[in-house]
Image 1 (cartoon, helix red, strand yellow):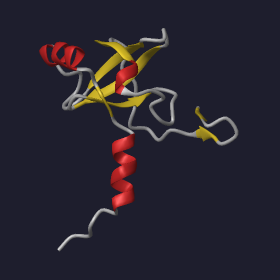
Image 2 (spheres, rainbow, N blue to C red):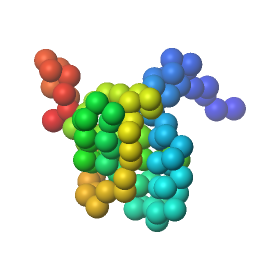
Image 3 (cartoon, rainbow, N blue to C red):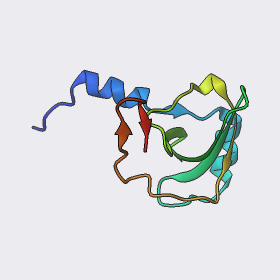
Length: 103
């Protein structure tokens, strides 16, 4: 019998995923996957902010380059597009503890 995942870990994992709005998710489904199971995307928010390099998997935004956490919610997303700028998102992110910004 395997060890159970602590409930607080599951909550933290879920907080780090942001669902992609349905219209954008449907559009991405029609595009080919960049790699097995994920796509590199860019994100435009309703307030005008733009994140050029991000990663999506299974209908969720899972990571944004240079960010410790995803700094917005699903309701903030205006559009999501497939990106042609891949990056090594699996490499550990170092965070400046004074500014809480990834380096």
